[in-house]
Length: 611
Image (cartoon, rainbow, N blue to C red; front, side, top):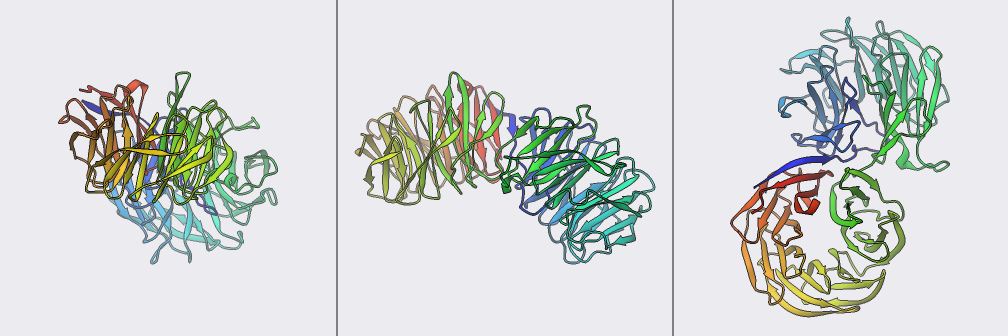
């Protein structure tokens, strides 16, 4: 019996308004590296559903860059640590180095894949030069008075490096070891967000919040001039060179991405992302990379919303847009229409996405969404299918499954929702003192519980309500009320998850301490209480179609698959999601398990040898 990872559907890069986000590509132009929450993701450019995750950072990650050799990645985090790790084999960490005692904002490799310069926000210093394998010092970063946002190293000898940041100064270094050579302080009038040496080493470009683009000589550091005055109407957050060194691309908060011809000093192409005429903040372009080694002239820009826009030089519209979650996924639901399985996920920031299980492609749900935490999702078969969501704005909203948009109706709830469940045509929302009953989005009644409710489940005409006192009440659902059928004293701890088996004969119960119990629905008798391997709160339970196995996800980051026939046999999967699993489900007829968690990723696991 085993669970093996089949695919990781990566989250979108973490972004911050008014800050650049670094994207990096490997030298072949096959993979993208970026930071998301506390992980680094390496993602295939041609098939975004293929990714790998690095989870060794303890703090929020900020930047990741491939070595020119393609064998290693260096990544930095908000605690000032740079880690170098193997990106071809097992992902083993080769070195961990403390650079500054603040956030790492950027790092760069030299052309030999030997030296790294990392820069950021520190108290004693704003950056440092090290060798990747031992962390030995190979130069000092001097000449700055405020945090550094960007660094670039010339890939040819003689080695040169450039750093820039909030003090509006570009500093040029000779190496190796890297030493201060000159500082240029009078060109930019606001923060500098990006510098970059051209691949042939002849040019250096700098861009910043003053919307200016300056060019310098790549060998001497002398200023060559400014181009594109007045073209961008917002801060320029990113710059990346084409492999022929004749062009570079910039990304700006004015929602545009522009390609520049160095010799002509003009923009040769402009893309405007997002709706025409709408100055949506979510469409600010905060990062861009021009992957080398590709023949299709593809470049990838990053929107503040986390969307990766695939732009091809010469075509006016994005080739594709890769969406996903940026924050912890808090709820999960599934629908199957015409044998096509779809996964629905809601996250901490109110975003709801739907995923095609066959391809791993995500689409964000448009319309009037929750402004924050999505506390639960439930599916009904009304019309062409509905998804009901509850959020911490204390509303119940609905999504049209076929149109993939919110229907626009929002029902105000009495209090903060603990969960949502759907029977045949009835939607139940559990709150601290009551369970509210809805039909067609309209409230038809409510049921007062004898205890503080923590979670609800429903199947057909039956419902179960879990309480803080460890009891579970099984009820019959009518259109406007719940009628209690049986009381189960399930646990000494608060109930955190409930799930009915497909034929509604059994009820799986998860509690705050990590125990999973199964009861008979008909009389409330205990079937098994042996499933006690989790060490923290059970967040999600799901039965397979046959009703023979239960999968459980927990805050202890682990997933277990339990057998009803053989309660002593189980499959354990440790560290499935960094910082906790928040949702689990079965797909592909019970041959695969799908999970979502605090790392904002969705993962597919292959199940083999169920007993």
